[in-house]
Length: 246
Image (cartoon, rainbow, N blue to C red; front, side):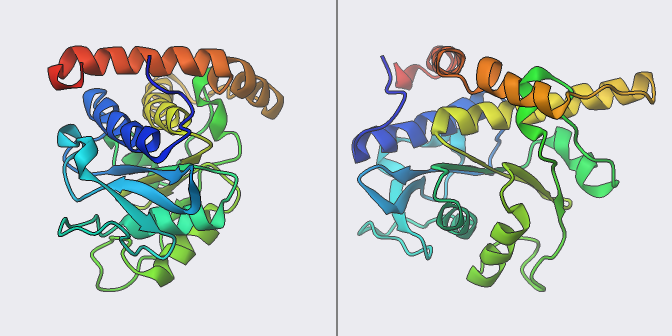
């Protein structure tokens, strides 16, 4: 059985690989996007793949990186330029241990229209704090977050929330664990899809109240048993689709 909470570097590295494959298999990540996890043996570093499509990542592709974005691993492998996002968010949010950055198509309309993403499903309950849109890109960087200054700006914009959107680009998510950040990425995409469908049916959309959302997060989304069941389900699907994971 796969580890749920990593205890060692080896466990954490495997989780980054599995999360990348799962999110590719579930159609949340394509050739672009990435995940990271804080090093359980050293909270001042994290693990993330080299610059590679999530579908192809193996444990041998994982790098150790510090909170300034410097690659600690002795290697010639090229890191993601946007590792700066992960470094800045993990540094700013010590209570969180995993970061997702990606570009699910279903969320992009909400980043360019002024229509907010709302928690309309119980598995979208983690969105109750609000989902602000970042639009303060560094000039000349092609809307990529690749400088320390902008990484810090990103962290300030996210604040104490779990999710924010990047105008015309994608989103960043933080969570306590890799299973939780994977669930958040999948259900952000699904919640946005359902909200859009509801908007096509009528203007009166009933969202979760703050109290409902907090209870749903505890009992139906981030509770240990449901999250373990989701994690096992997604791993099983990935292993069936990707025989090299078996």
